[in-house]
Image (tube, rainbow, N blue to C red; front, side, top):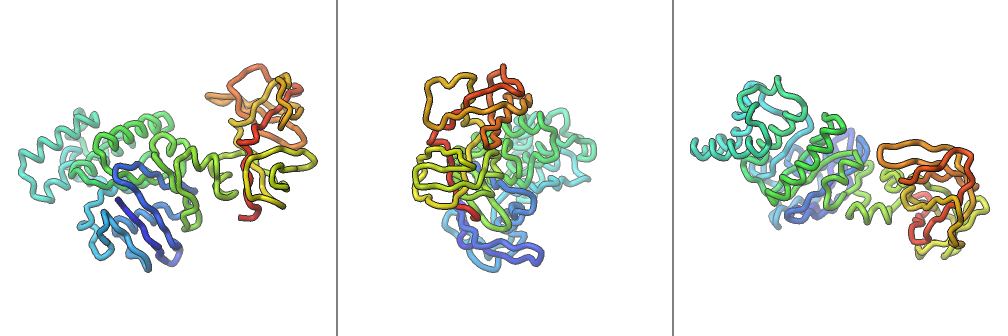
Length: 342
């Protein structure tokens, strides 16, 4: 297990503030956040590139902060992969084993197994200059896994790949992590990429750890407006709450959130809104509206509806066109209520 305890560091142009985080053995954790949030800096502290000003980094209960990078036994794959340009694919993967003076026959066996597992047999004698982005990613990952590390840190490992290859490689990463039973910490800023691999996500913003949980937990209960917007909640409005209902511009909705009275923010995810041409007998939280725009997405329709509030609705149902009169239902349990200005 990796534990970060009150970790803080000031690098001049950027600082981390009081990071507390536990990453369980065998977990796949994604550090998620916009560019400049501090995700890369955080894993560079963990791997030992920087020395923190305050706090501790524990690995299985041992404080590793006094140790040099090479003593921490944490595999690190930087964003640019950092392959050795003068070594073949095979030699890049073997590098860590040879540095540990492993017998040649044993090194060859391990490297051959990794090359086969990652589908690199036809590339084993190529130099990095002649590899595609996806191939470089596989080689860098193979080099990291060759020494059978218990902890693997990946900095934007899929950022250089196109969308289709990114999805494929995300699945491969997840499969490799499960097979190796190693603990992975994966940095990215892509919500969809995180959903392909993560057991849990840890959201960062401006050098702080904002919220940690499973993807479903964080989507259902974002801690603040930043998290809600970052996770594409889509529909977020200033409103007021009397404890059981929220109102905005004269439209009132029942909700099941507790502890929120006064000026608040109301949010609802587009996929949790139901849209029909008929009311279907649902009275609570059902209002009439007019479709203003329909946008075709790869797996759903994005429907813009004016109900006095401009709503975005995701639907897999065809048959809605701009100008249609519709009925919109928002289940009370799917209304998110947030403190305003937090």
